[in-house]
Image (cartoon, rainbow, N blue to C red):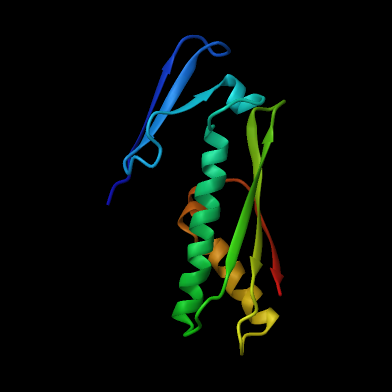
Length: 139
């Protein structure tokens, strides 16, 4: 299986503009620019897309791990906070903040164990070479 995306850019770094399109076309010539990446502007940026991909992948991985354990997940919500070091121009890490509704018969320790396993096993986590931290709110 292959997934594709396309980026187009025109102009210099600060004044130029670009678009990003994904295979599914959910992003279809979605604009990005210097301002959307390093300031405030209308559009997306690569780091935001990495955070979104990680949040989605991890949340599905938690659900999959619960399913494999014979447990049906309730509500799972993940915020992925990507730390971009502007001085070094590098991603320093990603923090996952998982909020989950309590599941009958599953204690907090077991749930956190499942979440930690999902963090390690998530396809996007495995693709990244930065530290990934996790906090779980299970209530």
